[in-house]
Image (tube, rainbow, N blue to C red; front, side, top):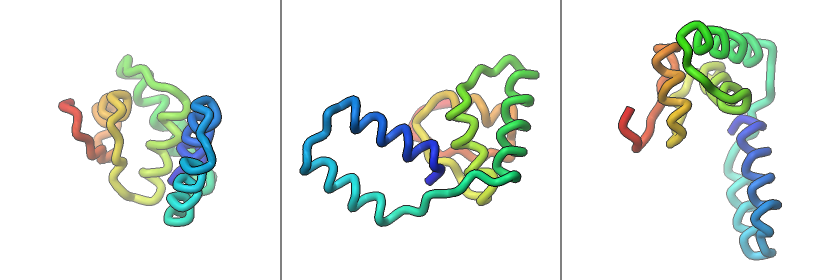
Length: 103
């Protein structure tokens, strides 16, 4: 899991005022995932994603681009129900997005 995705989940937990039980489940979940570091390669993918999307008029957020860049770095599909990621795939065809949403 990209570190930025973890940060977004952690922020949501804090905003949502999660109680002890939910926090424990979250901690158990985190033990099963690996946090992906941001490397130079990740940053290069991020810059390319943002550039390609901008060239094609496809809006996105910085965090969504970091998440997609991490998927590109480890060469795995991005599992997301975020429409922004589906639009990014138009600009960056080698970004594979698996989603339950229609494109």
